[in-house]
Length: 358
Image (tube, rainbow, N blue to C red; front, top):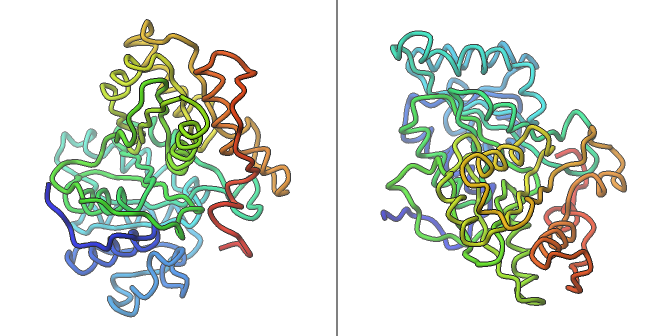
């Protein structure tokens, strides 16, 4: 594998900023467009200072007109530019569904491959200080359902540095990348970058023999913490797969893991019904149902709009205690498993202390 110059420790924010800066610096086709990209906070710091360095013709703020701006980005992609469009909330992408699903995803197919739409759409998901029902949705399943779209969910600074440069340089179609709001300040230890193969796949990040955990985004980090806790306080050995590219899961990797462990937990950042949890269950049930020694366990948001009150929000999202308990119940095959659980109420209290909307 080829290594890339990077520090040993990097935050999620720094990784995004580095890839945005490098894209503008190295490729004159790249433009960054979206609400707040020229703000001094720069989409959680990921675009801060880029306007000053590269100018308003490369880094452009936009009005509240998501469908129109996405149409501009689509037209730019069809005419040789590479637009990186940003949405500070995943919810704000909903007004642009027509441009993304009816046009960007289908151009290649409708015109016999004569047209390509290379573009990256960055959207922010996750809870914070009480964003409520219209500012905290995790909508990856909506877009992963549509052929022609690639949907990524980066769980670390490493996967950002491996994914964004690849899709900007090599992928000929539209990519939607979900970044988690709670992760921007987090520091990650960096390994040698995998830059000689496509990152549009899944990653096995921990091997184990007792249970397979398939997770997305920040739930990958929660799965690692749960696995470490269970290894310390019990004999449960967890294998973890970072789904990463939810639109194109590595089915073989998942099936090989489940064939070894016989037990499967799926932890997603969104609702369980008709979503990532349901899709991974479908793959296993269609291709190798006899591998399962117990019913699949799934974790996700409660089936309701997100409440604004923090006390209710803490009940709405699964936390480390919920995930650890679910794994222990499944592996031990009983509710009274006797394993001490981590005492944690809220991810927002662990990963980031919010004092305002950003």
